[in-house]
Length: 113
Image (cartoon, rainbow, N blue to C red; front, side, top):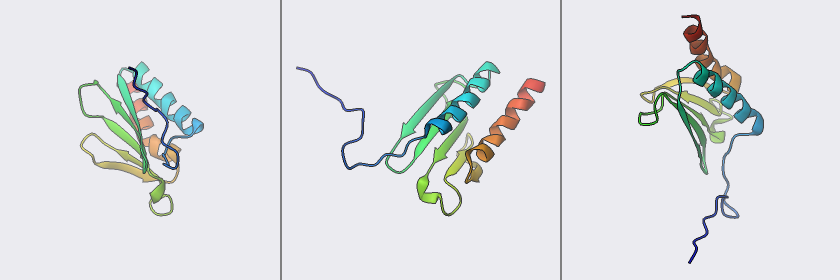
């Protein structure tokens, strides 16, 4: 007998996800970090309340950075939060570009060195 596993949320259940433009921006940064030899793996988590992108140096470690989109915080601190390795908040903001700037600065330093 076969078991069917639905990969889409059940009807009536909302799911937070990244838009195509957001995902393009995130994956572009990920590709540049891989090319620089800093990151090797990533994970996406799409949930009912938030969506997150985690980037890893090695797949067996904790994520080096975790970018979270939480629409519930849109009117307060901004829907984007960037967490560091120990769970420390590196940046919060309303715009994805401003939050990713922290990681992009590290990329520029890594390439210049």
